[in-house]
Amino acid sequence: MDRLKDKIAIVSGAGGGIGSAICQRFAQEGAAIICVDINPSTLDSTIAEIIRYGGKANKLLADISEEKTAVDAVKIAIDEYGGLDILVNNAVYDIALGPLTSISLDDWRRTMDVNLNSAFLMSKHSIPEMEIRGGGSIIHIASQLGRTARPGRPWYCAQKAALINLAKAMALDHAPQKIRVNSLSPGPVETNRYLTNFSSQEEAQKTSNTLFDRLGKPDEIAAGAAFLASDDASFVTGSDLLIDGGYTVP
Ligand SMILES: NC(=O)c1ccc[n+]([C@@H]2O[C@H](COP(=O)([O-])OP(=O)(O)OC[C@H]3O[C@@H](n4cnc5c(N)ncnc54)[C@H](O)[C@@H]3O)[C@@H](O)[C@H]2O)c1
Image 1 (cartoon, rainbow, N blue to C red):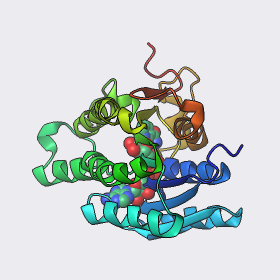
Image 2 (image 1 turned 60 degrees about the horizontal axis):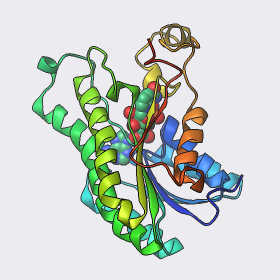
Image 3 (image 1 turned 180 degrees about the horizontal axis):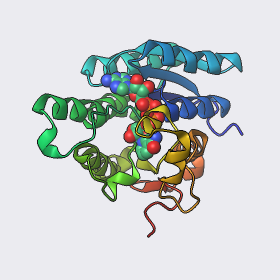
Image 4 (image 1 turned 135 degrees about the vertical axis):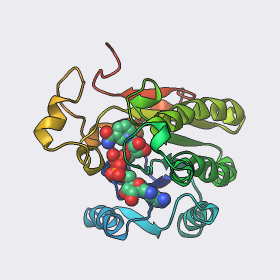
């Protein structure tokens, strides 16, 4: 499929499990991607994969919580490709699991900066360029834990719920500019970040709490992101696309 032919996208957290899958899927569907991440080695791997099968990708090694990163990412899109159509806010910063009383203010603020404030900054600088193109698609990667909660992750549950409602509020404000804004909420997905909380992959699969007794795969999330980014979702805005294997059903 080439649903994203000639589209230009920025993806944050592009070196991570889900971010890399989104970049690769977007590239396979014809988009050029500005890949943003703070981890040089995983960022390089994502770029190498895209280039290996002839896709277009540019690298921005930077901290997504800084406003300069948003400015620089948009500038690369304009300078290299002439515009911007798609933004995926996917980066995440995790701290040790524990109740709110165990979290320092500095740690709380860092999670806010990377997991929520970056979506504000990236969107703020992307929207004017999307407007020039006549529209666009913004996707905040949230979580099933933005709809429900688990012990030991108060920062994460709060920030993911905020992203889901931020998408709705932005959808209202930016519909006149033909910019669709949605969130995408994965359930438990097989990425290194997720697996670090378990002693083995088997344990992670068994305790996934999905209706299929397995974790999701990054590609299954990337398929949803490609849908939201494409014209197949031309009537979809302000929604939260839940891809959680039924985690939240019971
Ligand atoms: N894996 C899951 O089970 C799961 C479930 C629900 C939601 N999600 C969401 O999906 C998204 C991706 O998760 P993942 O599991 O692929 O995580 P991951 O850790 O594999 O990827 C996250 C990426 O963000 C990057 N990053 C962190 N801080 C950054 C910063 N300051 N600036 C730039 N980049 C930074 C990391 O280097 C990493 O490459 C996240 O938003 C996460 O909350 C994941």
